[in-house]
Image 1: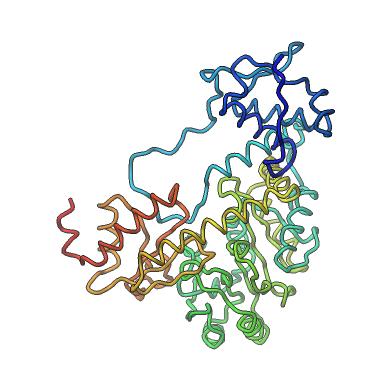
Image 2: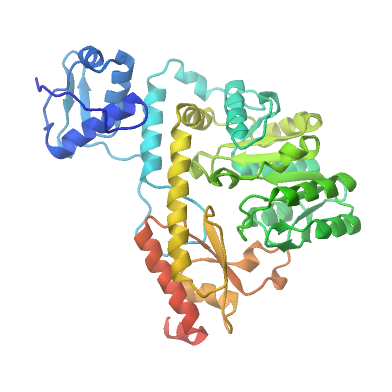
Length: 461
């Protein structure tokens, strides 16, 4: 038997993850060769001062990564390289345009965190319970985890008020269904997430635009729009707004609340990007919980594909939201909420958010250097930036010219409630590129295209 003992000092995180990482390092360095037998789990647990269950989860994670294989009665052995386990999902195609039009961050660190969570879950009892229907608001344990996550950004909520959703998009759809009212009008930022516009169109809701400045929605403009529309609700993204990346300060938030109270408006606070901003102001919901529907999601700060969201309505509206969510989907996906819940409770969520913040700051720095001298609206914690195009560029021309060069971006008109009034600007996502080098090359192409002018696009078929 191979006399091998892992050194866990260089590996952070839960001990079972450290054991799997140490196995991976030993295989890569040749300290463990194909066919070598790992120490028995009980012996290794004694040597490391951990439980047998911890070693078992570590070995299971290494097996899921294709490094080792277990044989009943014989032990755990290092696999031949050709016997590695194939990934469950095919990688994205290498052909086609680089999509800088979507705000999505999924990197290798997310895959590693998912593998660890699945290994942990697979070792638990009662897996069949994750496949059952859950109560309409969601499983109470998952609601409690959501409440703890929301509490991190300064909003103290009861788990009984947390309604689970399939991401922020379902939360938004449910909010439109509950709050639109007989006049079917909702006030919203003049430039807003395209999903807001699409939800309004599909549900026959009139969106009344409210003007923005560098700090987001303007209170005087909100007051005027409320007076002329008689709307019941206002929707806004006060923290890292999409697409302008503005951040509303505490004083501005208080002014918005003042107008909402005076006009008896319900505030819909979309806070999906708020968890990326260190030292952020408290949510609007903390100032006016009695009139705020708070929406949070794991999509931007943790993992977009798991579709985990949390919706916190005022007390009097909880039942109405639960009824709408049940009508839309009957039940939430227990496995997705279990994965996110474990990430939150074991510290993985904090590590992922910290890593994401650092990577986004680095990418914003790259963009800032390349677009020096241009009019750019962005924020160090934002997935995206807004580039005002130099004359004589038109936004649709520039989008088409960029696509001809293999880069997909979005016109600001895609985010406008009144597209014909949108300035000549484009939104560029920095998070979707697989690495900084790829992003830098794409941004250089866009910068050079912007400087060259529309004539340069005619040479590209």
